[in-house]
Length: 430
Ligand code: URA
Image (cartoon, rainbow, N blue to C red; front, side, top):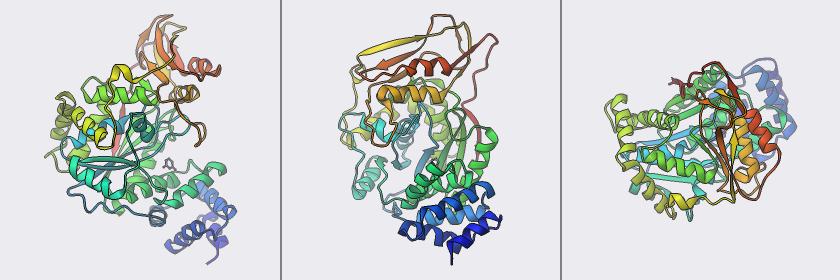
């Protein structure tokens, strides 16, 4: 088999066979096929797309390029969730303890944040002592013991994705739906769960900008998961504005804890209760989705979900934060509305970038982050403001750059006509 023929087949719109895709992925991981040929195939794939079969073969080849976690030692149905990446997205910190509190088994591998999006591991590590480095046997023991463990992905998990993603990043081929779907699903499948809930974000701060694109991506991911015998549900959710009211690691942990205590912002609670209902129902911890939803809501309001969060933090070596002492910044700068009217937009991308420039996120993988800094919103889209009202607070330590204020100026769009509060969940697929 020759790589050039595989590229030509794809360029001409023919389907690549399973053998061709295996050859390409194995050869690339071993270093036998050079970047320039894989780049060419990626671009041909970007334009020609992939059939469902090809997306399945690619996912399978990537999945078996490294370790596949064996969760068979965990009793019961294993549930997992994945977000395609957002701003202010602290869902895992709420959902994980919430579904674990009713007995579903959460064995989750998470990632770090890069650019304008945050990552669960960084939020966890902002809690004193909390470790994300757990050996596999302890990880499994912890899930059997308290129903939840969240750890960092090892380097051995889907090495093909690390190589391909880095190449896609520099060849303009990241936004291909089958490539995104196989990248996400290979990692989820390698993590070993039986039930997978996908949170596919749409909007300014997300990969997918339109509902149609998000639906296409979701359908590909659900089909791939089903081909592997997994129950997969995709929630297409709003990322035209940040999720919740906080952006920045400790600010988000605090908001997650408030949500677990039943005092969270409406959009975050709605999202978590709805995704939790599917995880709880498919883990056979309720007889219907309605019952599961009520159970999820009750656990947030009866102290059980927060109690599980405490157990989870302590099991991973952390000290549960005392919230009024948790965040230490030199200065809190109010950012005020320059216009009266209804908030039409709070661009998630700009808010994420502003938080990154304060030191709350990473521009490159090597950057250090300051867990204390970030942005706290005072209103959301649809709210009415007057000139001079504080629309957000900037939590600042040492780092500052002048374009932070420009980013916020551009983030807010305020108009005279009344604006409806957007739906957090646009649709559900699967
Ligand atoms: N997230 C991933 O893990 N992979 C992609 O290709 C895009 C988003």
